[in-house]
Image 1 (cartoon, rainbow, N blue to C red):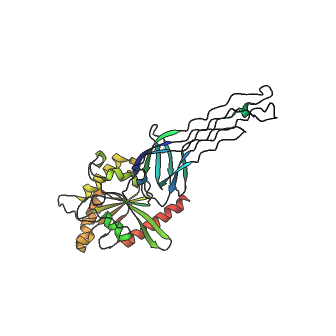
Image 2 (cartoon, rainbow, N blue to C red):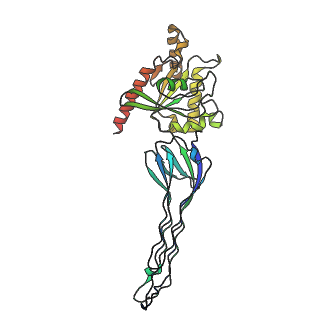
Image 3 (spheres, rainbow, N blue to C red):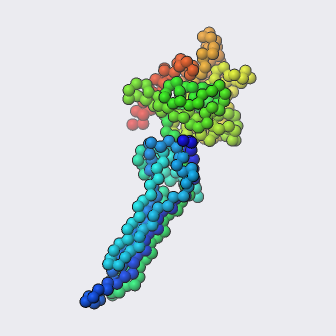
Length: 341
């Protein structure tokens, strides 16, 4: 299934049914009086979060959704049937924005969570409602009101505890495949990851967290270069960002320190809040260096960056250092959750 994380749809709630003007007409019963019933309510439109969905692909082709109208009232004080509500299933993490006002209507982050996006019209009143001691034969009724209509922008932000950040070919896909059951496309050329990948990292029974990998960023991403910038929003909900750095790039002219600074600048251009999120520096591909060379290269990168946060050395390809990294992340996430409580 194609990964779709952003769609625009039009939703229309149903119109309320009109009230009825009717009088009782039966043999041998004079002066029957008014007996027009009310109309039924129009159907509303709801979005419901479904943990079984991972993409908005269901809305790729069909963009118009309309709930049913309420039925009209009838004689003998019969009320028209209300229309059923229309419920649209969306993935967890879907953010809903009104296209016209840019108002954030809601954020669906819990399974089975319902969000009303278009209210159905109210039913009209039949002439029975207007009967009084001074108005024995009312001929007035009201029409049902129109349902709400909205153009919505649905934006999927994946729910993950940890996000992977780095240039193309930094080893993000290799890492997520090493520590989880995710099987992203891996190759020795850039831009193999074309859409976000999710993987569950199991430390031991009942201890796990969700990791997200997005396409690699390049310089100028905030101005439209490359693929990664359109997926950066998927990192907004994460607790930690792992900034993967290739310590021995294929291009000898490439400087890992400048690579880090480039990505930090792109984060700031996209979202200052995201740039301030907690980041851990992960120096990858240590297996390409001799042990005595590792210290020199890694210490030089950390020193030139003046990095104050956690630093880890790993080889995503061989798995060296990844177990300790994942265990430390799990402990840190558990501590964060405990502090939130």
